[in-house]
Image (cartoon, rainbow, N blue to C red; front, side):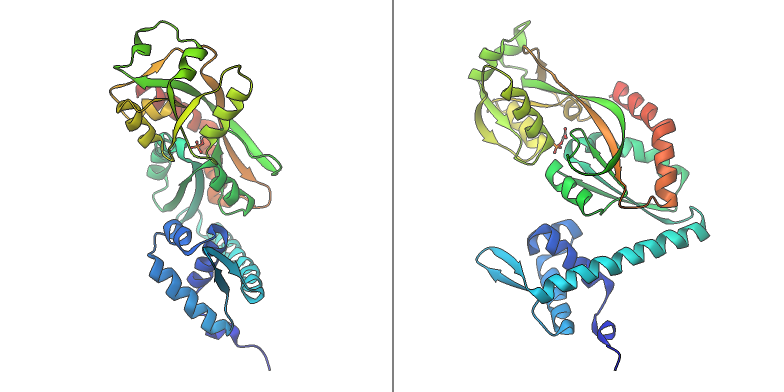
Length: 311
Ligand code: PGA
């Protein structure tokens, strides 16, 4: 007799939740990424496990370990949702560009300018929904590996992934201090002096941390790390509060109207990087993604440059 499993599985959304838990490694991470509460995520997974008739995972200490049945379900869920995306893509060809979703995943520091790129595009194509994920470099790399989105924005590209890439703007990582700090009165601060100050650094996994560590690896002095902070904004506030100095992308200041924090002229800085816009070969571009890519290539650079200059 043919299996009736599909009749028991509640919704595709449960499969989506299952994948979010699998990729995120925890109920909390899945709830955050899907904007759901933790009890909702747990409840949906419980229903899915009931439909499957076997437990999907076990909680071992603080770790969530998927059972063989859970892993098999994850594998099938991926295929089912991929098929749905393909269907959506084919349907959007019939519908033209009237509707559909564009999925972008960008590193946290790109959040200051990506909305300015999206604004004119969304006005031109009001029927297109945008799903914008903002996460640190490590998390965006994971999404990229899983082919979760149409496009990814990094300033330090992941290694070992087959990506098509266009570069579109400079991203300078500058030294900053509170406006009241004596460094702001110095024409030039030596790296030795800078390294004597308490240093505030982004979390492991962030592109900013990656670039900062790569920079200091080549220097004779090392920063005096005082605090690790997983947010550009919180670092800026901490600099304002005179908790230390830091190195952040200049965009974090330019777009935020930050008063009281100043760029300081430190020997060998800024760290020069470039933003790139990338997409994986494993995921075919949808018609909407193709139009967006064309927009980025033809007008996007200029729109962003203008925004940067105005900020
Ligand atoms: P981050 O990435 O926001 O994860 O620090 C920024 C970058 O790649 O420069």
